[in-house]
Image (tube, rainbow, N blue to C red; front, side, top):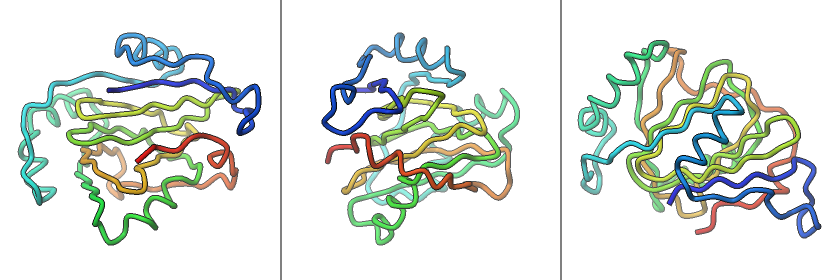
Length: 186
């Protein structure tokens, strides 16, 4: 189930301020809270169950209608699919790379079609943790400081939308803030 937790960016692990000021599984409340901070969030139906080993091209073909919907909104001519499994050979280095706080020069737009992942958004004095699961569409504006946790045993497939033909390009902030907040439980 999708979830939003909001923490103070200054929270210290185990400290009085380490509890979230808001925790909700209500998709409407999640969308409303994120919208006030410029983040898009929608719940879409999962129409296709993907077979084990489905390749990225087949994922894109299966969700062509959803891709067309996002592309009709403009700005995202480049699309790919990422599928992470517990046996993916690069899962640990990719997890470490995604866990470092970074920004992008473009929006980060994802539609989760399987599994789950944890987006952590560092906006002003807050850290918003958005647990995205199958059916969640999220749009993080360019320049938003964030990190992503796919867990130690990742299991997700997401369609990624880009306005940059080079795809995923990160600018790492060097801030160790991500180490102070909960990770995605396995």
